[in-house]
Image 1 (cartoon, rainbow, N blue to C red):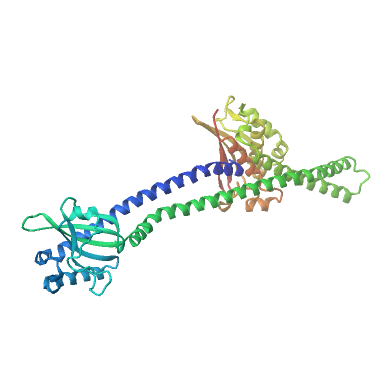
Image 2: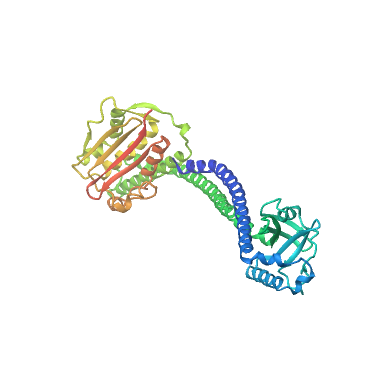
Length: 447
């Protein structure tokens, strides 16, 4: 698949990727929120139960829940313990014991010093108590957490019932309060993690989409410029070539230097025209989609014979043998766009002939699979250095030893062949050893 086609595929997938990320972000955020909320409340309630067991609630039985407790050593001991618990954990704002009488909850003891404006003396009625607090202290509800608002602010409260050891029935509770804002901040920090992670990925995807769109625009602009420039240059170059060729038909009136100059002009012009045609072919393939490929059955042997015939002079000059492996039978066929496959095979075969050593052979064969066919072209030429083998299909790149052999070439031939193979849903690769030779493979799907 060509560069532009791959860009279009990526572009087509971007809305799906972005939608999926957004949905994943929302779902993961809600999931983490529910889990963190449940775990935080459970942990808070567990800590409150631990405090309840550690404080020693038997002292609570010795309190009257009146101002008389202010001088009671048990009250003073409990108060000191509650203050230490609050000071040891900065998230906890209030710790308190609540009792119940005359249909009203009241404070036994709290963690505030007597000089504090938030201090609740023993016996003070807690008339803003929630229904849940009343139910817990009366044994109508189990230990629980709740969000509530009273004169002191908005809190997350953990409420743990305390049973009378004689009757084994709840008659008081231990409560701990955390500021709702602090609690929510902690929940938010954990909940925001998946949302932030997904958002970062989403930003990267969007940036990638923008970059690919710019690349697509750049690639199209480059293709259009190359095509336009090549067309504009090809016309005058063709005129120069024909003029030189016409003058060389009758050299009787020309000196040897003039004849040599015309030959040089003709050859260089021919090379330039070849390069421009490669540019145009490459630009044309970039604009072709698979839907433009017209596949027909092509009998391989006569098809390859026609291509080889175009290079017969070079074959004879280099004393090469063109060998067809037994795997290519008289009825071996391929399926594809004949004109484009001709150019693809022509590039591969002419390369094999061009870089073969004199007196060697170029062998062609096939491997037929259930769903695809692999065709190979083997030469005994200069080979491709290992460091160059991953680069030669990218375009505008020639192997270092190929450059030493001849300056003629743009490195577009193999790139063009790859583009045609990919348009057919196939691929091209090679195996090569320097100074020994190369084998190029073409895999095409069967019809």
